[in-house]
Length: 207
Length: 207
DNA sequence: GTCTATATTTGGATAGAC
DNA sequence: GTCTATCCAAATATAGAC
Image (tube, rainbow over all chains, first blue to last red; front, side, top):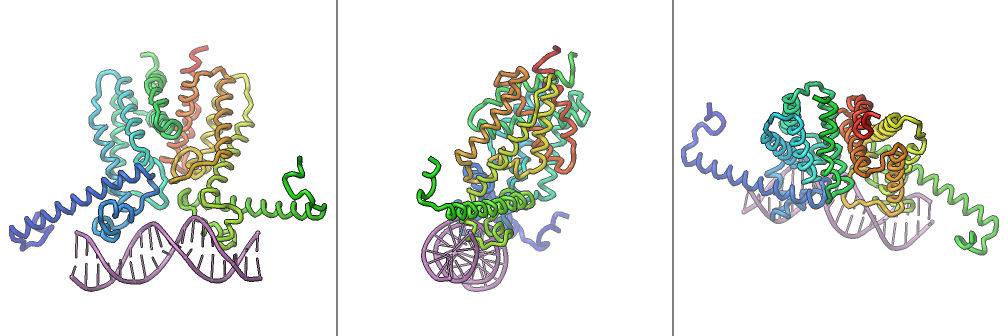
């Protein structure tokens, strides 16, 4: 079964060579992706250009096409990366006994994630790049993120869809206002606990 | 004083001619702006190009420069327009006796304004165009909008800055989630009343 | 896998005739 | 105020040599 994926007649030497080539390829790709993140952070998500990206990694623009078949493919990779990162962070949240504690953890996690990198937030949660749509594979991870967030809320007894939607609106609102109105400050970050308390009281009442 | 703004030796005929020319100029400018709004609505805020815009109003691209000195000047005009529109709508809100009614009106107004036109929302409230910053004049109107919203909240007794910030986060959150996750639906619109009730209870308690 | 060369398109912007 | 002509730069992308 495994041999079907490559040349069936590969010698051990050929196989090792292929692996090394593959590793090198992946390493270069990583380098490109890292630089792309840097660039969108500094210049803005929509300012990314393949030329500039290529030159930033000491490559001719055309050579990038060995790694990414188009500009959207680069964006798609960033989209995937961002969602994987968020999913990983959600995975570290542990459900304690107090529901409000959990909500607070989620809110802090999300707003921190958002404010760390505005370009990433725009890419993942706002439709700001003309024509760009994530590939099915990348989108699947975004769905996972969504499902994970929902599962966390269900774990504290919030299984109504409308509770979940109100929650995400509240948290996304804090994130987007922090980015839009107080980019380098903490005005809205400081409201997280109050917002969580308000929401908790609303959905749990006075239990 | 008035004559200082133009040629001091203008005859009545010259003056009328100048007026008509001015009117025609403004009319054409309006037409360009209208078309620009249409285009960003359809193709996305960042997809606007002066060439396409010019051709859409049956003009050579270069002729646009008679009306707008740069692409950012067009964006700046849209930014101004959008803020004026929002300000005008805020002006129609009347402060009744019930605070929660007022909050509900504001929330509906804002979320409706946002969901009507995603490009406009991005332009006014998200930093999605690389390099673009509104001119001082346009920004002044944005400040007016902000001040008006704040005054409305103060009218119902909410004079703490943190209340205002929590409020705008909540409302902006509903708006941005509606745009991002349910573009043509009403999932988050339907949550407005609940969100307002939650917030009102939080800030007013059980009076 | 990287380069040179090149195609093609598009973009914003200016000069100058009419 | 609009056009022609033009510039210049940048963009994405492909073909083919090495």
